[in-house]
Length: 481
Ligand SMILES: [Fe+2]
Image (cartoon, rainbow, N blue to C red):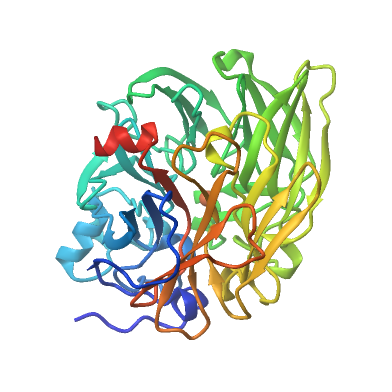
């Protein structure tokens, strides 16, 4: 018997768990589904199978649930499946939660010993012919791209058994995937990071190891055509602090950001570390080089509400609203300062470019934003934005107060080669609605509103990251043949 979930902002409202898997063929579509939009849209998010043991919860702790929308021949079908990690299977067999919050060994049931804590709940990508569900604390988990059946941990032939990034970078010009694994020795080991380059066909071609300045997760990193930058932000992980009753993961408001800068094909001994003011930064829009400068457009804030400080005090969403800012980094080594410019002050969550041009200069950004919610993470981001970073022009659509809009991503139309030539897609849950919608915009006219709404016959909980693969792309072909 499963007991009801306790009251928690991330277990109610837009976040209330569904706890079921479904197949929904030929969904009802309002409006006109473009005939040059054919491919697959995947989304990952946290869908806890059982209530946590401690009576506390964190949005990042739920079990990964993949939603796939297959768009072809004027129809859309949907399928959702949990990522059946070893953790998930162990708890399903036991009929209850066994792991402590975030896998905390001090609060886990003894029956969890010997099984890795892996939620696989953060991102879902195609690369090298494989569909991979990702979190940053465990290996990638391979799933069947059509059936969403879990195949198992994908360790690249036993090479990556520690941690895998939730945000590996795919360079569409080379087909390579560049990856990192942070905290590879766990919470109590040395704060070592691994860096991998993986070929288009899925073989590791390069690995480097280096020590981080302190124990910290690294949710994303910055990749350009020739450079990689590892941002160590002021989030600190300490088992010692947890053992003395403090938070295991804490925001350190007076600690600088350390940026490790390395040639993309270089070695760890070429790493140059520079510092900047404390910033929370989990997601970048895009990164590129011009002359001796590296430019990174990032969603960042001066603090975060995601984790308390080391004394347990937590900032509010209102105190930590993210904006879109540009970091300018000197690549010659003559200047160690980072110049920061605010590009857009909207309350932005996940900015995304036309992925095909990542690592090269772009100007079009797509993002879910918050216009009227008190707390966009809990109450939902209620609007979407296309922002031109070159002209400063905004193109906004507001879904209505109380709607939760997920990550807005660009979807190329068939045969397109120009930046942002196509559509923008997001998954929304309108306020108090029993249904969710996959909404499709013309990428160059967001303000016009959705041109098609694909109606999902039940509410989908708020999630994390999504990706779209057009059926004429190499990545789609590598997985679907
Ligand atoms: Fe993320």
